[in-house]
Image 1 (tube, rainbow, N blue to C red):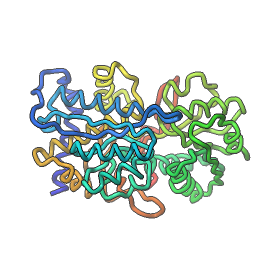
Image 2 (tube, helix red, strand yellow):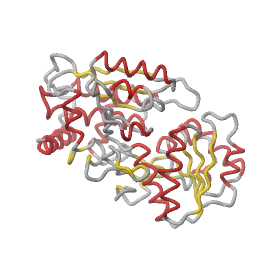
Image 3 (cartoon, rainbow, N blue to C red):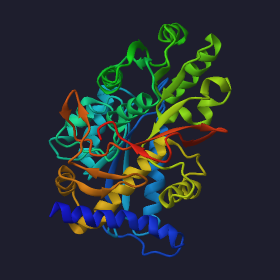
Image 4 (cartoon, rainbow, N blue to C red):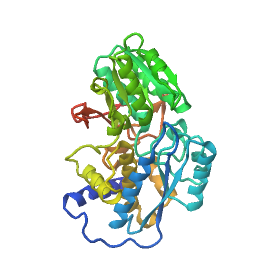
Amino acid sequence: MVMNCSRKALVAVLGIGALLASGLVGTAAAKPSGDPVKVGVIYLTGVAGLDLGNILTGAEAATSYLNAHDGIDGRPVELVPCNEKNDPAVSNACGQKFVDEGVVAVVGLGPVYGANGLAVTTPANIPFVGTPVSTQEFLAPNSYPFLGGSAAAFPAMAKYALGQGIKKASILYADVGAGKLAADALLSDPLKAGGVEVTTVPEKIGAADFTPALVQANQGDPDVIFLLFSAEDCNRIFKAAGQIGVKARLAASGSCLEKQVVDGVNPAIVKGLFANSETLFYVKNDKQAELYRKALKKYADNASPSGFSAGSFSQVMTLAGIGDTLGADLSAQSLLDTLKTASGIKVFMGTELDSAAPAKLAGAATHVFNTDQRIVTLKNGKVVEANENQWISGFK
């Protein structure tokens, strides 16, 4: 039954792209009615070095698009947003808010949500389908992310780097639990397994000066320096790299390629920069990516496309496809049951969920069933493919 449901979900989500292709976007649609489908959104803003406000922007744009059409199975979509503020107590309160509001799922990303808020939603069997960054979000019984997060991104980046023939690498990572986990198990281990000499250097999020840590990471002339920081810190790291004359290629998360991050940076520093993308938001001829960009223009005051807003947009739209299939049976529990053995469920602007090929963490299978990533770079200030228009996975 789950397999059949998954096939229908595939059709439902693809149908959203077909809607755009047929020119029907903007035409009259039946106004959603009935009890709303509530969706929790975890995000973060107002913290130095960690501004993930684009996550809410993407979720809001997707919700507005859906409510301007037929919602989820004809019902309106209502967001329940919560800014976790990188604070465990606030994150717990966010989890309780989601339980109290009766959300069917939680999308988005929060650095401390996995260790705190997720524990609150677990007894209520509310699925977390957002972007995973912590061990709990990879393994918890109610966590089945639509996108791979760091569990998929860093092994894919390591695989790409190995394909480029690198011999030495440094990893400059945020000195928090999730940062160390990514630096060691998800990036350093596969690089070392490929014969690469690896140096890891921790540094505080929002550090007053990244130069000393970057100097340490640059010792020994590495071929690549991986930066495991958010966009705000990446900008300062890029500028420090220019000041000390770093020659190594830089690699970072996709948010570090955004225009506001690389503006004012020495072009030589970002020339060889590569990163991951979990969606095709930047691809001009992809119909679902076009829908996303048009939704931002219409419903989000023409906000610039970004990896974070694309991620949350994808999560809400993927949820809508599954919800259309489940229909009146849609609930947190039915969604969770569907995701546990997901196979063939299409991810909006991405590939699909496949429970038979999960990401692994320290050798253990996780609940990350979408391990495909795109490797991207910058050309004339725009995000473009770096890997010949191919999805890449560190687990396939």
